[in-house]
Image (cartoon, rainbow, N blue to C red; front, side, top):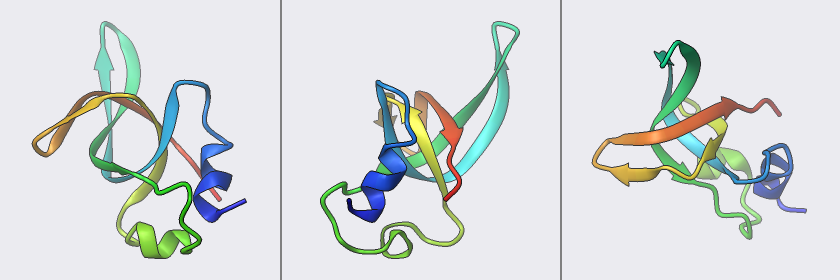
Amino acid sequence: TTPAQSVQNQCSQGQTAKCCNSLTKTVANLIPVTLGLNCVSLDLLSLLPLGDQCTQSQALACCSSGTQTGLVNLGNVCVPVSL
């Protein structure tokens, strides 16, 4: 198991392990959600430690498959992951 796969294993089906520059809590249709901003998917096959894929200032999260549009991932609902 690679370091990124161990994070991916914590994600629900349909979610992807990502490094996000920030996680922002917001309310959508009266439901509190966490949105990931400027997220990149982890390389699940890489043997590099997570610190080499994400910077310390980035947050590890499991995110639904939102699309990247500029710096904001609209529809990229995320759940923070702890190691």
